Length: 444
Image 1 (cartoon, rainbow, N blue to C red):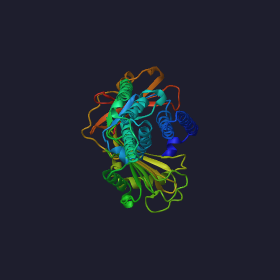
Image 2: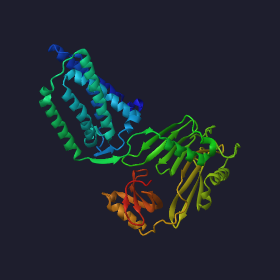
Image 3: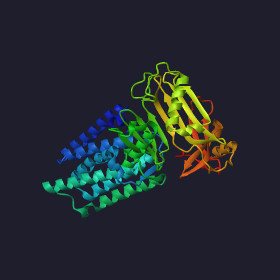
Image 4: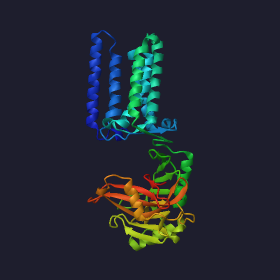
């Protein structure tokens, strides 16, 4: 985790260490000249500078999102490495803050308001731009409060005198008003979205069962016991859904959650097949070609996903000019609408499955709403939702049955592509082909 956070930031880390040490040294010298205790205030200064540098400047200088997520699951960060690290990071601040200031109310005020100020700054100030997440503030506050409690126990054990609470009123009220004022002003331009989870977490037993069922459906008893693989759940930001990721000795797989519709399984990505890939018929195929790959993929598909017999579009194409094998795909078009059931099977040059992508939705929908919006109308709806459309060209080549809120609806996928670029950025919007409603987020 630390490597991922600090990778490519070595110059910043060195600068932060130098600046923090310099500030701590200045505080130490200044306190010593006044014949006051110097070591703990200097240590607090060092810790505060490091925490502010990491939280505000490490990944900043982008465009502020002006969005913040509020996590319903208050216990979630306790189950994640990131959450625990966020808590541990502020324990020294609370501990050293109380021992350095000897002010209980003022330290607690800083511990509570400080993380809130940092989060709204990350969401509203370009120089500090990062994800604003209530779970981060929650763990920072709890970590700081734990530090304060430990410092209070140390102070009592060692007979250290703390400032009387009544004498802290003025600085505490001033600090509280300043902190609350900053939060209110900054938060006025932020959109808050309530979600069920915000960070990668360990998979639940229910999610493990869902992943196992999907792998058994795809590959039989080979994955009935997933062994010592690692299961994690990654929520989609701002949404009540995400994906389950399983990493094991033989496969890396992802399953959409909670829909359980989309499964991807990767065994290898190499022009030199290994035993990690999955055999279909138990035989070696030293003279593999496109026709043989199509035959093996078809045999596999009929055994595991019988609906492919109703597919009216089946193609086989080489992957990396055949060096990585061949990909066979099945699609079902019903009255011009692409059905949810889809299957892609990649056969490597040894005749084994190296990759699988499957949508486990239905191959036919009897109650799908009728098509009342034309492609041209869908494009116009997408255009009207955007600005500077003169620099974009629009396409609505795909009409697909999509799942939203438990219901299947026909939707156009409208792509807006920057003119004159071969691989320019593409924005996708989704237009309900029955009602004309626009959705910016992808379906389940």
